[in-house]
Figure 1: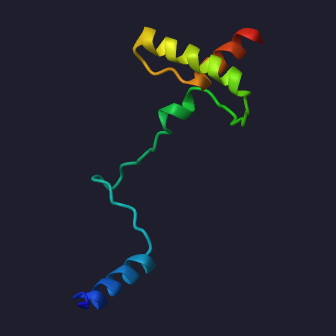
Figure 2: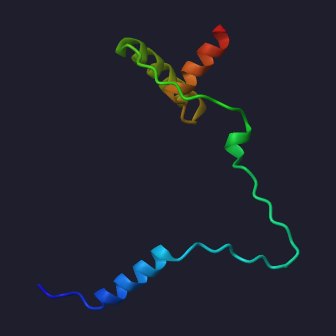
Length: 91
């Protein structure tokens, strides 16, 4: 099997890249302030992750509802969306 060429050069470049600290890119104007906006998805509402194990019969019923709504609207409707809607109506 042939030994690949420039292995030591590649190793040196990888080591240099791993040990060099990251640099902030300079802005176009020296006195210009830069603001970073939060992703739009997080600004809508806060949420908490929940792990829920549904009986397979119940999951099948909710999946059927999600499938039917997907066919009606033409947009993908998930099982989670259906569960959230039912909970919001019931509380």
